[in-house]
Image (spheres, rainbow, N blue to C red):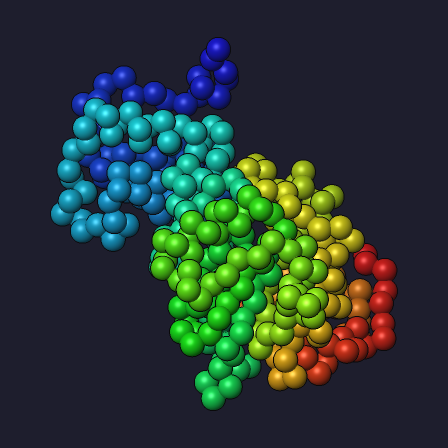
Length: 322
């Protein structure tokens, strides 16, 4: 059955009109602009989104030299590319899910709708090895990524701290299956272990004692469920388990802060990404001992706190969220 959206989407009946890579990238960018698809899962403009979709769909490098942009597509390639562009515009499926591939810190990761699409300001922190918070002289040897999802953060930790052992935990067995594929693809299976755990609950040794880490990071669910209807349609393709948390989005963050101390070595530190919840956290716990990192964007926030400060991280205060 033809829907109004299908009618508004121009189909290509004459392949002679669009033939080259450049033709299809330009056409895809125009269609994305026409349908106002949401960009927030790896690109910031329609041209980049279109180039990513077309080139990656054809197994071509995103850095393809301009001299090859006038290469013509085969009939089979045209069919595939047009269908992907149609689904991106009409079904509003993020490009990463259509391609089952996302890019994080310059590396490809397998993704599907069992995991969030990798996007995190943790990339810059990991690349800088958490300086100035952690010195090279005190480089962490035992690291934990809570809510690992696709495994991209755990893998990046292993790559940037080559002497360290890393655990990636997640409550979702489906997510851990995706992470396992990525761990194997990036050949870090000897240093990255995956554990199913509800926050920190299952991170115990063989006799039930808490496992200890020098560094804990997390990009947990932090979106208020009441905000779900206000999010762009693209977000509704992502797993709700990875996006939403009760208590105005603060439930998992609070659990992490309450439990982290018993899982950190004496000089350990925790870092948690909280999206745009900085103001809410400052309001809820006005005397908290958390420290905010300086980030280039205002729509993301990362907090950090040391093992010593965690014992009284609220500063004995809590107000009701606004």
